[in-house]
Length: 88
Image 1 (cartoon, rainbow, N blue to C red):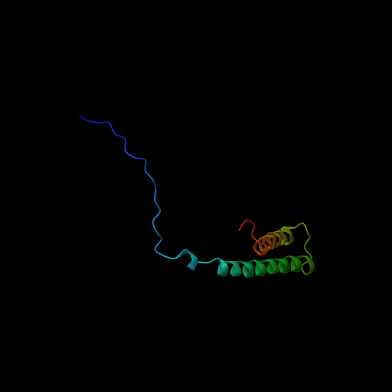
Image 2 (cartoon, helix red, strand yellow):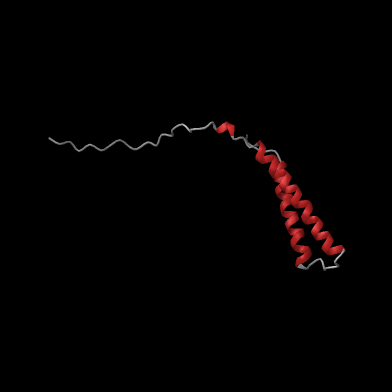
């Protein structure tokens, strides 16, 4: 007699990783991000100030507003990088 057996459900088992996941900590990446965002923020503020003050471009022109918006964006990213992470 043949019995109609259903196979057991497939359970995905995670094997061990070939490396230690703690070896790749976030600390070096975090420090590099702070430096990069800080440099980009200061550089874009400088470009926007130069275009507005030295080149006498209008504040609403793309030569001033573009770098100013970019500086605001990277300043926000810098602030988010420096803020403590919740829930950990």
